[in-house]
Amino acid sequence: MIPGRSTVRTCRDPVIGGSHPHPSVCRVGDDYYLVCSSFEYFPGVPIFHSRDLVHWRQVGNALGRPEQLRLSVDTPASRGIHGPTIRYHRGRFRVIATNMSAGGNFVVTADRPWGRWSDPVWIDLPGVAPDLAWDENGNCWCTTSDGHMARIHPDTGTVLEGPWRTWRGSDRQYPEAPRLCHVGDWWYLLSKHGHALTVARARTPRGPFEPAPGNLGDTSRPIRSIGRPDLVTTPDGAWWLVRPGAREHPSGFHVLGQEVFLTPVRWENEWPVVDEGTERPTPGESHPPLPARDDFDEFVLAPSWISPRGRPDGSWSLTERPGWLTLRATGDTLDRPGCTFVGRRLGHLDSRVSVRMDPGTARAGLSIRRDEAHHYDFEVVPGRVDVVARIGPVRQVVASRTTRPGPVTLTVVTRTTDLVPPSFVRPTDEPAGVEPAGPDTIAFHVDGDPGPLAELDGRYLSPEVTGGAAGRVVGMYVTRGVAAFDWFDYRGLG
Image: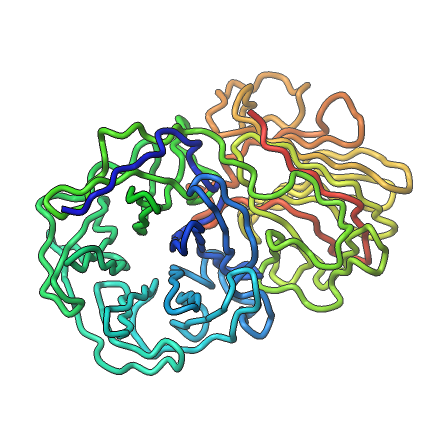
């Protein structure tokens, strides 16, 4: 029997809000480090730090240099970097992941999670979402999707033995991307198996593995799209599952992507099960992952800023106009890859995002997006500001107003109450005989105007409409000329 019971009774769940899928966690002393998939965005593999598993702060990215992460311009949305695992062994941190678009599985290493990570070392193994574990003899074991396992040298990428199948699962469904954990006298394989989280165990990493009498328990409520879990213990011997999921919504749409949830675990007959006797983390908005406002007074961008597929030198600057983020166009539309876009993951269902920008003669603005075919843009051109909706093959200017030359403040508000029907654009629209049924309303405000310029149904920026796995990202862009942004302010509401 493995002792230890959760001592944390309540917390705000998800503990990391917004699109942070496939989380993996490791503990070093009193510190926890967590990584997530980054898909087509650069920098890749965000790294978070916590001292309590509840409050997290992003401290860096494992793939922060262009030479580490090469994503071609035609990399589809929600492809790119998948399924990372972070582990600490003999003074070194290692992150292993899959580049779904080029190269396959790789490992990067660092002495400190917030420091400089190595260039990728590629590993010739089948499958995706790899995992790392070390035995008492120093052997490194890599497990990938469908339960493939191999013994590897993580610093050279050499496959020393294997791969072979460890456990084929049951009920005609294979275990998806298992994680290998050594606890007590057993080796455990944790995986997503169909619509449940399951576990099998063996005395050695080679197996044979036997499945648990039941699964890990009900970890799906109040979330959906549960995914691959990771297991971690606290210094006082408590155990937790860190796993991804999407918050349920009465409309049936979920808009933020997979977020990071925390579930207590207890041990019965040397099997991990969800601890039903422990009070669950309370559903609600996550703690802010970064300061609400960025005044662009530093010499480097904060690690939370991301760009689709890359951020070319010369497309952005914090020194060209000190105290401003200057963006230079590299593409002429947000409807195709290659544009200049700097944004952050939207982490709250109800939010308010504002920017103060000097557009000059540029075409630039603030966009909330899922991919090139699904985004709402708040766009400024000389003498005018437009609200533009791109939904699949349709691109339409839905509202406009004139503006004076000089700086302008743009604000985008998402709200889950007082929804508008999908046919509405402005608050003054007449009733259209259509009941509001989307997940949220997205409103667009200019400067100090008392009302929004436009309000749009948020369902068209959800995976149920767009497909793909990534959540919403909101950010600044320029598609013609050069524009400067004085500040960016993000507020979670409610």
